[in-house]
Image (cartoon, rainbow, N blue to C red):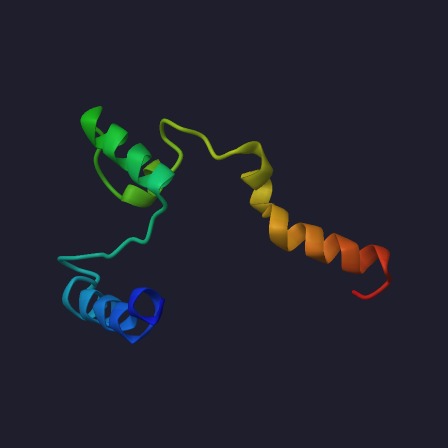
Length: 86
C-alpha cells in the first residue's frame, strides 16, 4: 500500500507540481473523475478558459455535496453538536 500512497506518490506529485505549475504557461488542477468528464464535455462544446469554471458543466454534483456539505464531515460534526461537544 505504501507504494501506492507513500513516498513514490508524493515524489510524483512533487515532480508534477515543479514542472507543470508555474502559474503562467502551466496551471495544475486536481479534479475528480466527475469533474474531469465535465471539463472534457466543456472542451467538446467549444468552451475555453479556466477549467475550474467547468467542474459542474455537464454532470452536476450529487445533491449531498451541494452547498459545501460533505456527508462524512458534516455527520460527524452534527453528532458532536447533538452531544454538546462543539
